[in-house]
View: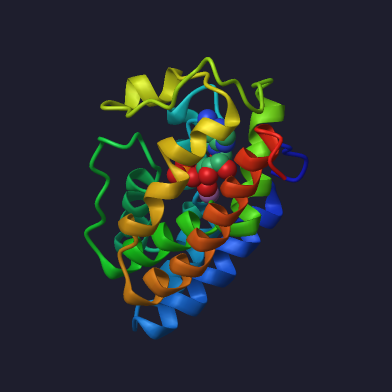
Length: 199
Ligand code: ADP
Ligand code: NI
């Protein structure tokens, strides 16, 4: 992740780790599981690997080489498996409090000031247009559809980022998401005004 320029660099991982520990403490989660799942959460991400299988095996190897017992290891890999957003119409729920905490932390890093920066970094990395009024945002009903979409970056706000506030699992994350959400709305408002020559 060291040299990633798609918004999934090491500092994303570090921010998710920090957020997950802050939220995890408030939610009385097992902080060992939370921290390790946060650190490893993007190793197998479908956006960063040619094969998800290869990424998953890498995680299993890291856990095994560090003598993490089977129970913890299974818990951590199941959290990582269920973490990713897969389209507005696709259910991605978490079974354990540790999973809920890490998912919230990852989703918080996708919104607010940092979320805006990451979305445009991702778009540039994938050679997407920043804005194209001819392409409307899409409600993705399946992961396949979400994965294959190539819309302009500004659409991603309507297809994912503005939906995250209502998908937070824990009360602590819900309250942090409110602030970040408001900031994105303000930003989009200004973006649209500038496009229309009104600001
Ligand atoms: P998730 O686990 O939900 O996939 P990640 O932390 O791995 O979340 O990163 C998702 C982030 O990548 C988004 O929040 C956004 O910043 C960026 N991203 C993903 N898809 C797009 C897209 N189509 N356009 C712009 N940014 C995107
Ligand atoms: Ni992530």
